Image (cartoon, rainbow over all chains, first blue to last red; front, side, top):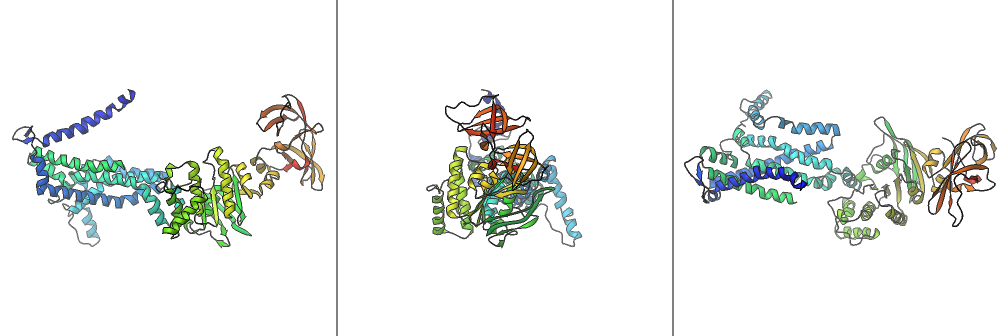
Length: 269
Length: 350
């Protein structure tokens, strides 16, 4: 009974802020668009859901987002793993400081930090000023896919570093000594012991980057170009510009299910 | 001929010296036990032998080769770690085969050698088991097989029995020692357990604060400790203070503080303050004994009874003797005459 009371807030939260909105979205997705407030009436129409799969515009949005998410997760892994390793291997007092630095950006608003990148990446921005001072030609970055990817990697790198670092620093270093003792060179020790034992952290990091990046709206909108049409931007468009709530809800529902399925598979490992 | 040699090994952690100019050599095929309390530097020395720590000064030689600067993965030395350090993401066979694969062994040859090692440690049929599905005793044997796989010239064993239950320890120790003898493997065992050291080793080295206090056979170290620390570290001992009043021909006469005069083997100047050490089992009750004490406590230990005697100067003498069935033990408060045979007395200094 006491246990049931203790988990009550958790369930209340999950029902109120996860299940209920999802149900609302599902209801909206099968509703019929109408010229009213709110701009739909209840019904059971699968038109919007069918459009998600038949309209190439939506399909391209999904594929583009999946590609961006995969690229971002891969880039975060390549950048984040060595950083996580360095942090996990540093002296305890340095480690605490470095971990603090990793999460320090969260002290500032996400939107603000992404906006700050505009100042860095724009044509007369910080980056081009540095390039100019070095005698190098300026590059166009702002409002391109590249700028969007930079923003994604910047924004989500901590979510890759933290779970990997946690795994690495919890690992028994004696195992690496044992491998070296048995004739493994440092590279072999890493491949045979360090890396395999950190894989759960890598899976967690990949999921924590891939899932939010796939649905990301702010970064593509602020740093991406007009062609950087991620599914997040498409959904925003349908909601706020076309006022087609059922269509937007259908897209959001498919995105939600599409991301929840692989995530639940990762959890079962 | 010295096979593994440590010459002038020194290492400090920051300002704390862990080893201070340590010299040690072990023979080929010998089982050498490094015995010391925690912090004595025994694990540090093991790490230097394994290549995990580089000494600030000194050399390590193995079979005539200087290996001081060789990294762990190039040394013909293998370690059985205290925690076993078995790879949790590999099977028993993969653990044992890990070192063999690093030597380039593959396929049938690898399989055969792993099977051979499994038989050696009586784990046939466990090849495909995962590490977390076998018992602690079995894990210990996997660790042993893994460290033997590469046929190391020197095997290092860090507290090999400390993680086992007491009743399993005895049996495992017997098995392990027989294996080491059969394979004629030169090994260094690190332990803080004096009983383990006495019963396992060909020779024992007693470490204290980074220095070797004494090296010798178990009997030599137990029966003829060079100082008070070694005497007390290797089993129970009573130490009676006194002053040397004379002696000749390797014999010393001591006036003990309790008022009795005793003769002990050794050399000392007249007037020197010394200790007369004696192991409890060597103190004998005897009507003609020159030491007289009052029985204070009697401890029944099954095979033996342990008696503490209060001597006239207030010091306490411990004695242990076999329990005699039917015989009445002395009662607390009774006066008891005891003697210390000439060969049982140990002349010690602080």
